[in-house]
Image 1 (cartoon, rainbow, N blue to C red):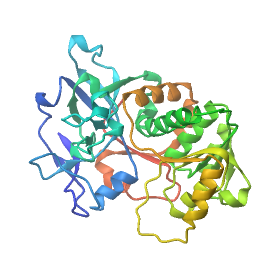
Image 2: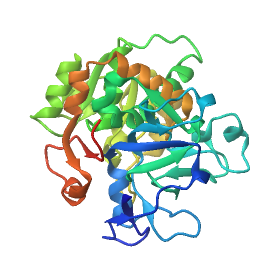
Image 3: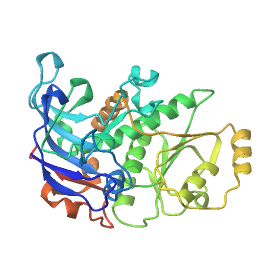
Image 4: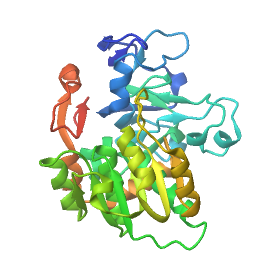
Length: 349
């Protein structure tokens, strides 16, 4: 079968490779890959910045944002051939740690988790893959065109769950939310914010084009100026850009008793002036919370399916700005200014 592979740690090793079919030991459910979404994590792995092949192997199959269709499944799995499914990216560590033992592998304490297409597990950018029934979630057929958006939606579903839990520490009646960054994760974070009935503001440097249109279609406000310049004081800020200066803005420009969630992963190496004493003083005196959130567990996948099912499918479809066949993977990784989400199509839905 065809698979999109890299040699981890080796830049420019991206290639379409012929691999054996996945062995039955990978799982009792056999899945045909339909879609794989591309994101910044894939770009960094392709650049050789990180990534880990499965034990004893030299190559890593890419792809963690995925959609597939079941070919075969055991009768006791509640799955059947033809069902649309999304594979869960992170799997619990083998010990397992206390968090992994209760199904919260997104909060793994010892770092021995594995991740499809990222860390010690082959990804979904291959024609077929196998897993156990508990390692996937079923998707409504109405979401067939946009199924690859489920995984990034899980990231913000978890972020919003954590925000809600933190908010309940005391009186909690948020009205305004700010989302920094209007990439796929930021736009999906805005979607969940609007679904919560919040007055939602989205910030990005792009002044015209698809991103402002998508935000306005949601009923949210789009800003091309910075958060401090906007005058918006948000009860909730979800930072999705990973840009250091924007992170500082998010940490310092919020309302009293605010919750700031950092989801954007920075590359590091950028030095900017920072008065940590003032940030600490303000956070203490205003009862602010600043926390980081990454990955998702099964609960968040299920919450994400609910969020996407409730969304306007035409709006979701516009997030996917390019759909490319697997053979055109090099063009798919060639970023264009108007890209939001690029999806590789591996088979017909």
